[in-house]
Image (cartoon, rainbow over all chains, first blue to last red):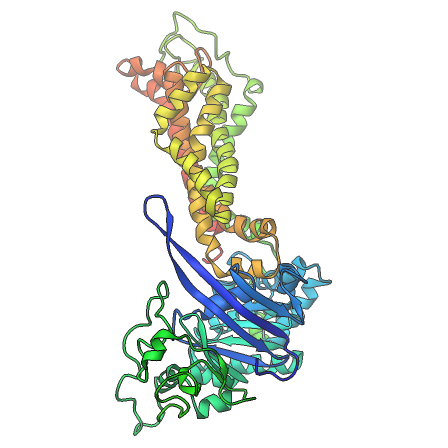
Length: 337
Length: 291
């Protein structure tokens, strides 16, 4: 979108609505609009951070990317090859891999570490899966000689997450989706794993999609940040820009919810009241208008489009405040501090 | 470093099943049960070569002789047939119709349950609702109904008992599979591009087999008792075939005359099902790599 060079991964209008079955005959009673029209590009070697509160569709987006959940609409293109048209799911899965949050649940308890790491390479028919797995284990900091024949329960959380990273890398993917991959680790281990991820990215030329609710972690590892709200992208911008100036009122409240390190600068009032609205029946117009402190009548009636803040900017936002022609009384002035 | 290097587990290079076997070998209770079961099975198989009396030949004079009578180490039954020979020969039929239906149900029901649990959706609904129909009947009633419709005989008992035990095994397998299906390692395996069959073979079966197997072994005692019940009603094994359940029933009337003798077939059934249960317990803990 705002990437000038040719994107490696390109997602257009991704949609996933989960039906809610109920009643005597199990009829569909409604649709959870988990992901509703998400589009973004990721450049090769870039790390895109995806943030948002729980239930906003971050993980569903991740699962759609790798085809674990079937998408209803939209295109996923990798290297100009569109899934379903120029390439099949199996080919996509060789190039996109995923690391899950729960390091224990994502390893087969009855399989040795080495077998788990080698499984993908074996399935894809790559040569020497075992040797490959051993080298990768060494690379992620787990001596293959010591750990190869252990079972997941014999490892610590950090070690298991290293195994999961090795497993994801066993097919030499281009893109790795990290879905809350470090969230369950304690802080010191989290830092080690983050540094490992950064090293691997540099060494193997990986592209990451890093999903997290921890803004500081996202800032550390990401080049750009994508903010989601109720299944939609509300803002996408390079880390420095969004850190300096959040254009969307939702992003602003998300950032102000971050605990401050400065005792004199405590968060006094709740940045955002209430729960997110029901995604089964999302609000009309801008989905955030029910909780937005700056909402105007137009926000209720018209859906804002994701567009660059100013012409040619890498900072995109979906908010009437930034569209001079939107009809919002404060339009064009930006958000008041 | 050298210290931690030596901390590699001793079973480092062994596979999963050999690790299970070595753990089972260290369990004295399970090994004792295995020995008893092996004795029962081997004596049943090699019964004709053990130099026993004819299990069908009765004697009107030597009826209901107590245990320890010279010439009849375990006494005689109500028709004067040698109890030792009948108990050992009886093991052939009893173990066969006590174990085979469960073995068959384990494979058929297990496969159905794994497919239903893994595929989900309409497939799951079809398989599980059909299973529920069978489940609606008490197992005894269902066994009697099917055996009654098919007629008496060993093979028909086998068929009816298999049908009786498929639904519970399917249910357990389905429940365990859909639990496993939710776990991230299945997602991880799928996302590495493996086909559904590969995922089931490599990741699902290993994690589903042991709970289903343990459940199935616990059904064998029920199965033996059901088979005995069918024989009693005359729609299972027919006299004069020696079969523990049938013997228990025909000796029922002798319980006031010679209670120890009448209890013998029951002792055999009890010992066999106890050993099966204890062995399945041992297997379950041996299959649990975690402890």
